[in-house]
Structure formats: C-alpha cells, structure tokens
Amino acid sequence: MTPVSTPHSSIPGTADLDNPLYYLENFETVVRWVRRHHSDLLTAEETGHIDSLLALNQPERALVARLVMRTGELFRVEKLNYPEFGIPVADAASGLSRSGWIDDAPDILLAEVFRLFTLAELRPALADRISATGLPAAAAKGLLKDTLIPLHPDPAPVEHWLPNLPTRVIRLNHMPLFDCLRLMFFGNLRQSWSDFVLVELGHQQYEQVPLSAESRAFDERDDVDRYLVMHHCRERLDNGESPETVWQEVPAASDNSWLESRRGRLLFELGKLAERGRNTELALAAYEQSGHREARLRQLRLLERLKRYREAWQLIMAAGEEPRFGAEERGLERIESRLAKKLGKTPPPPSARPALTAFTLELDNPEGHSVEWVAMEHLSQPEAPVAYVENTLINGLFGLLCWPALFAPVPGAFFHPFHTGPVDLYREDFVERRQALFDDCLGALATNDYKSRIRNTWRQKQGTASPFVIWPVLSEDLLNLALECIPTHHLEPMFRRLLDNLREHRSGFPDLIRFQPGHSDPNRRYEMIEVKGPGDRLQDHQTRWLEFCVEQDIPVSVCYVRWTGTGE
Figure 1 (spheres, rainbow, N blue to C red):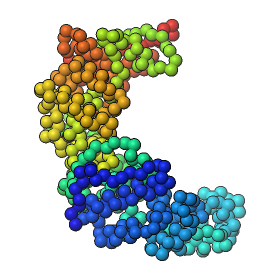
Figure 2 (figure 1 turned 120 degrees about the horizontal axis):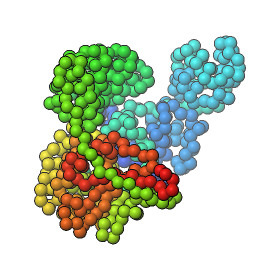
Figure 3 (figure 1 turned 180 degrees about the vertical axis):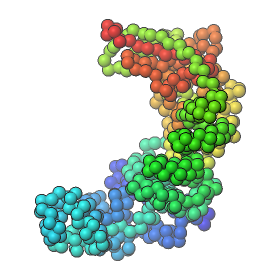
Figure 4 (figure 1 turned 45 degrees about the horizontal axis):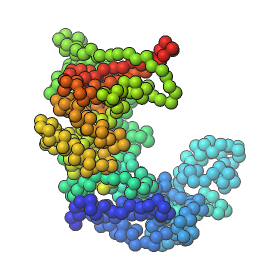
C-alpha cells in the first residue's frame, strides 16, 4: 500500500489538557499517523494488531496507553489507579486479557519480583528461601537480591514466588510493536511516549512541511529493522556488554544516508569503549568506518599514542582534502604540528590571530540585573540604541532568510507534523543535502530581495516554531534596525560560518548590538559588543566569533565592566 502524502491541512487534532483522557487522544494520534503514513512498512501482523487496538473500548485503550508510557512490561494491577477510565482498572485489564493485549498470569523472573514488590512484602513471602541461604532475616533488599537471584534463575508465576500475597501481576504484550510505532513517528527511540503523549500540542504552531513517501527516512522495512538492530547494539554497549561481541552484530553499511549517520555514531561509541578496554585495533577499525565528526580526531590521537606516526601522517594529509568541523580543525592543526616534528617534516605555520578591540566601563552594581543588562542601559542612547541579543539576532535573521531550506522535506528531516525543526540539523551532511536551497537563500543577499524575504517570512511565520527564531526577542523594531544597519557583506560571511558548523557556531555571538543608523559610514552603522563582568573571561567559542568578525572587518569589541568602589 502506498503511504499517503500529507500537506499539513490534514494534521490530526490535538487534545486539550482539560480532557482527562487527553493522553489517549495524543497516543492514538501517533498510532493512526503511523498506520496511515507508514502502512507499507508495517507487516500484516502489525497492521492487524493496530486495528485490533483501535477497536477496543475506551477504558481498555486508555489502559494500554498508560501501560505503554510506564517502565517495563510487568505491572501490579492493584497499584494502577486511573479514575478517568470510568470503570475499575481490574475490569479494563480483564478485557485486555481476553483480547490478547495482556498476559494475566505471566511467568516472571525473581529480579522482576524484587523490582515490583517492597521489602516488607518480600521478607515474609521469601522467608524460607532467605533462611536456606543463612542470611539474617533483617538483611537489606540489595543483599537479598544479589544472593537469591543467582540461586533461582528460572521464571515462574508470581504465586510461586509470593504465595498467600494478594496481588495480580500482568504483562503488556506486543511491546516490540510500540517500539516500532515510536521509531516511525519520532525517527528515534531516544524520545519516550511521554514526550508526545503528555503535552498540549495545540499551544504551539508548527511549520507545515509536506510529508510524502519521498521525504521519509525509512524507504523500506529493512531500514526500520536495521535501525532497531543498531539501537539494541547501543543498549548492549550501555549495559556493559563487550564491544568485541557487539561489533559482530553491527549492520553493514547501507545506501540510506540518514541510517549511516546513526551507524557512524554507534561505531564511534563502540570505538571509544574498545579504546578504553585497550583493544586498539578494534577501536581503530571502528573509528575508520565511522563518519562521526569526532572519529577522525580520535583515530589520529590513538595512532599517535601508539607511535604509528607515518600512518597518522598519511591520514592527516588525506584529511586536508576533506571537510573539517570546528573543534576538529583546531585539533588536526595541533596533531599535524606534533607529527611534523616527529617525522622531520616542515610544521604548518601557526595561525595568525587578530587583535581584539576592548574597552572598560566602571559602573554601579544594581542588584537584580545582569552585567549585560547594566552595560546595555549605560551604552544606549536615543540616536544609538543598544539591544541585548546574544545568540538570537544573527541566528534569527539567518533562520528567516533560510526558512525554505531549513524546512525542506528532505528524507530523515521530518517524521510527523509536530517538529520544531529538522531532526538532522546537526548532521555533517545537513547543508550538503540542501545545498541548492541554501545557495538560493544566500543568493538573495546579492540584491535587496533578501530584506523583503526576511520581512515576509517574519510576518507569515509569526509564532511558528523554529530552531533559530526566538519570536519574543525578534521584534519588528529590532528586525528593521538590523536590516537597515547591518550590510549584506557582513551578513553573508556570518551566515556562511553558521552553515560551516551549525552545532558549534550558533552560539558565541556577542551579547549586545549598538545601532547607529545615522552614521555616515554604512560599515559602521552598528557594532556588536561582548560584555564581561569582574572575574569573567572569554570562552573559546566566543573568541572564535570575535576573531572571525575582526578578520571580516565586522565591527566588534569587548566591554569589560568593573563595579564602582570594589576594585573589581
């Protein structure tokens, strides 16, 4: 069956928190969304289970939603209290047992018994087993657990473990189906059901990104299964399983670039664990196959520690022809310099660092205001207003101009109608996959067309969630001042530096901007000012932005504030 293309006019309704069953409405929004838009990726059995779930009566569906959001698959019925069902939870559970959605008498491991029951409940029920071990009756729960579980490894009904204790334990069936639904909806298994089900979605506006089969991350069912395998590999690593064992289960490379980025991240983490375990060959192999932005640097550092200098040199020479990312570029320069000395080669010349303009203000220290706010109030004049913008202004202008590129329906970017931005925003190939769109957006800077584009987007998208535009800060007055005073040949290099590394470069901008619209020099109609209070110093990412601005002849300075009468 072909999945349905969705132009957001068909966004499902969102629940109101005044409705006590709002979570059920949101839960079913997910289920119905996946059923409709990913039907070709679901097996016939999974589709049948979904249809069966949606056909249950409301209290039973609500109980399934509640259980899916809880931890694990085993639950004590007497501990579940949901008065909004309108019927006893035990009755809803019985209905789910008849329809096969729960197991009413599951065999459970002793470890689960310890998780579900209190020490006061366990001691009398396990008294004979405790006595047989020679442990005192008052032994702590942790000691009892560590002692008894290895002696009783097989699962059994709860009555076997806790005879005469009035309890009812149930197991929710089909949890792999719910993991699959969550993956297809969110595009990851990091987000829980609660991240979506327990929020009031109607209070946020979302961009209407067309969703079609071509824009999905998963092209075929094998992609879904491949992701699930990688997720389980990561879980096994997190649970302490050896990287050598997990390495054997890592899927081979695929043509799906979105999945390859996930595979690269898995291999990077596996490599770090192998390195810690002194399996250097496995670590090097994992780093080599990983496309993670930090993998190449880890590989080089490991080769350097192993004194395999020539291998490292060959790798670093090859890296000169490939993209470098922020911190990696600086790390590569340092390693190249060290390797050159060890191999008798000419080291690269040190990068020249431009001088920063700085000035000092001595101000009163009013309580309740930040140093940036105090500096802004002092510096602001009617003919030269100052705004406290930090990372919001340049990011906001960039987000408005490049809105079509940021919200393009690229595969693996949007999974459902409730995203605040593309989920692949920080992937290494984010810009590459949208290069033509970004070229078109930035190309508008060559004419005054960019101003109308930015203003039109500001009006049309007002309040719509964006990873770059903070609407309460980016007022129309601020927007107009910025467009009047910041020339295009300053905006363009800042925007392009942002695109070089969105994760690192979207922060570190100066705190204040002083506008001087009447200045005779169009290059000096504004100035960005980084403010530092007593004892504060520039951070690396701030210094890099300041130095970049100096290199581009963008007016920028550092303001050091001292408090009057304190000597600081």
